[in-house]
Amino acid sequence: MDIETIKKFIEAGYSKEDIDRLEGSDHEGGIAEGLQDANGNANEGGEPEEPKEANATEPVHADEITKTLEALTSTVNSLQETVKAIQNTNANKADTGRKPADATMDVMKSFIDTL
Image (cartoon, rainbow, N blue to C red; front, side):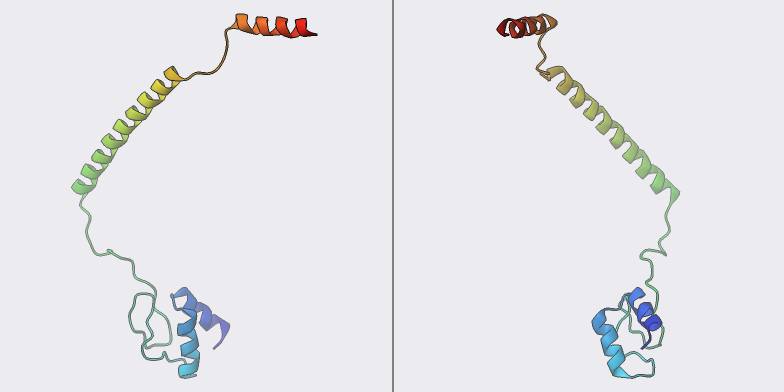
């Protein structure tokens, strides 16, 4: 089996074991019995099938999308308000460890005095 054929099988989702079985089954390009493509379907031709997209046939209604977006928007807005309240509370309760400006002058004077 040539490199291009092996690449096609790999891109289609075949494993190394599947490709090894293909090489050992028949050398005319057929697929051994029991092999499956990426979708789980038996593939008896020489070319691998492309994986199919799930839920491609289900219609989506605009009303459902609008309701879902409105619900998500209101949830995000309430979460943003909660986060802002938590941040404000934390900022108000935070102890920065800073001393007033007078204490800084006291430290500097104390340092100079020790020299």
